[in-house]
Amino acid sequence: MNNGNQRPKPNDVLLMLGTRKGTFLFWSDPERRAWQRSEHHLGWSTHALSYDARHGSIYAATNSPVYGALVQRSDDNGLTWQAFNQGLDFAAEEERRVREVWQVRPGHPAHPDQVWAGTREAGLFQSQDRGNTWTPVGSLNNHPTHATWMPGGGGLILHTIIPDPTAAGRVYACVSAGGAYRSEDGGVSWQPINRGIRADFLPDVYPETGQCVHKMVLHPDRPQVLFQQNHGGVYRSDDRGETWVDISEGLPSRFGFPIAIHPHDPHTVYVVPLTADEQRVTPEGQMAVWRSRDDGNNWQKLAAGLPDAAWLTILRDAMATDWCDPAGVYVGTETGQLFCSRDEGEHWEVLADFLPPILAVSTGRVSG
Image (cartoon, rainbow, N blue to C red):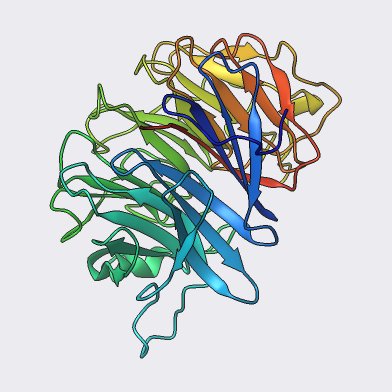
């Protein structure tokens, strides 16, 4: 692997890693056999990265104990970065403050300069100028159910934002621990979408809100279907979150953090189970990714090339798929290993090792 001697080219696979000590960019042609690498934001904790195909930009959610929480944007594939935080906080008269940025996502193509950010303490923020300035989304941040939100292991965080690519006004947001919400009007109003999801740590096991969502995904070819890895199981909704069904049967554990969806097949999803909420390591020390090709009705263990006798931890944003055919699957660990499969999970290899703890893995297709 070469370290940044060249720059990404159009149609390259761009692999973006956020770690506890910086941002790492990897890129390759679609064969994905020879990778280049560059390092950025060293010393910063990068919780999330997103590629904005509308402008060919990369967004990074970066955090420093000295400089605070910043959204950073590169318009030249990481060569240079601009940092922004104007407006990225709650009102001055409020007690709550933004401590970290946990998510940054480009908006719908109909709104070419719209970007969303999620923070700790849990808040949703919107930018209409590509991240230069931010506005808090009070309709969610001050939702009537806000009092039911409570901190999870990473604090009280808004970590997942999903603009529906088929509907300019529909967007989803997830809070840990607060539950999942949906807006149909671009964030003007929000409704909880947690019916059927367990919260075993609460007196009411099936509350309206307060569930600990770990990650949620959808596929643009079937946007009415959502998949979710929750603190207490894996779930699917066939009606945009109105109701959920438990699809955990066949997995070695109900607990885990990441979930990813196949780029071309909306029925295929990937999860990485961990033993339990108090044992956040791979079951029996066997690193494995589990795949379902039928909406979660059946699960298959994928471990060829992955290590055993390895009690690894994989965090909520640390798995992604690329757009190639066959699709690539990427998993990062809290101990700094980056695993790669070029054949949809059938076989695995180590793409990089000895990295800082990996917090986030995402992909993009480099535009011209």
